[in-house]
Length: 401
Image (cartoon, rainbow, N blue to C red; front, side, top):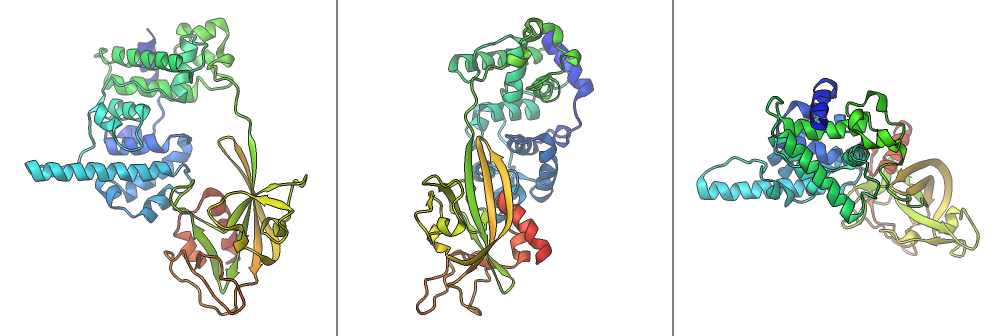
């Protein structure tokens, strides 16, 4: 039987991951949120550092925004960490109400599936994972790994993103974990069944070149029998990739660098970065010049919407510093960093020393106000959470500082 085969295989082959050594729902919840869109090997040091710095729900609820963003720095999708803190504060608030009503001052993660699902940033998959792994409840899970295993094992050829197929997969996942719950010889069978499905998809039933020869459920797998492994799951055509180009400016005065904090409500909100703009070519020019992009020659390039005004930067001189290429979902991004001098900054003018000051303006007769931001030393910059690409710029600056 497929469920028994999975449980037996997982008992022997499961990886020794740190969050598998605990039943603490808080620790398991942190791992599940971190593992979204992120590889296990990347998550391990983040999870260990997080639990060391913020070991309880209360500590997360009371942490500063700067602390949680710094601990999350590099994991991306920062809405996740802000939702985690919202959830922690909601749990603490409800615990406070219970204490006032009954005198019970314990702050516990909820165990009821519907209560977990109602928390900020927790969807059906995450709620099912927490309830099954932490509390051994027969709650199904369905992520990319599980979808791949189920579509191949049961020979499902329709697109998992379609509503009917998705419902079918949730039903199958529910039936499997429900069956596991009745297998008394297995300890924590619901937890291990769900983890075995994820583990099989991660280690054996890979997207390309699955290792069918060592698969514990090979004899049950319809895709293997019909040689459909490479065609399933049927996810349809991939979205076309989009190229994007950014220019970043490294401006230094008196041992301090100009940086800005991204405002709320946009991608990478609250993180820090060097001043930058996004540009696209016009009039057949594939790579507009820096001066064109910053407004000196507006016919040379078209600026896209950014949280900052591009005309804040009219450099008197620029020279290349580094080029960073990276990908986010379907976007292929090129970030060109330039050392820059700004004509509107006077030597010896007062500069902000506070990381919290993001509206510094230096006025001089006959000159425009300097661009808003904070002037900080390298030591101060290292204490802030930067976007991934801009953290690489900072890393290249450090040896020069």
